[in-house]
Length: 256
Ligand code: CIR
Image (cartoon, rainbow, N blue to C red; front, side, top):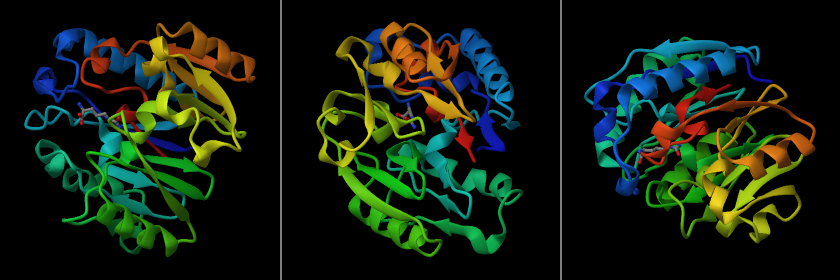
């Protein structure tokens, strides 16, 4: 179960965030704020305490807090984003993280290692890590070593198509996993009960489990149906403005 969630308000500079899909247009800032409000409400209704950090105008992508750290029951690992325009975001999370973890429970990924939290998927005590344009082998090596001190295991999953691991695969507990594209046939995930996400709903693979409820993005009916059939309560949240920057539901929070 999660007790806490950290989010960061998007700044007006959000419109300058990194995107691989400029054809979707720039995010509408006012709408993005409303969607962020609804996201926070959805999280609160799942029984977590939400810490809302102020916007950081100098970092357009800083509302995607998931990439700045990996928080487990036993430790916090401060990441080192592979995207240079995002690298400073992690250090700016440390003070907040220190409110929840002791100094000796906090580990740091350092250059030349890079790692973004969007590449890390927690399945119980095991952490799958995407080898991506943002997370490199040295970042994984440091991460694995740090996690091992706390009894956590990890393994590397090379990515071919997507930005982050969790862009395409998300664990929603009880052995259930949402899988799209390149992850459908991956050996690493063969023992899970897979909920298949069709290509035209690929973005919908990024759902989050919060204390028995699954938050699903608006507009992905096959995903919603699959999640409901797996027995979960569902909350739908519109993330259209974040999608324009390759961001989804998981990217917008740290859940621990
Ligand atoms: C980026 O490219 O870094 C942001 N525009 C999107 C980050 C999405 N984060 C995530 O998947 N965890």
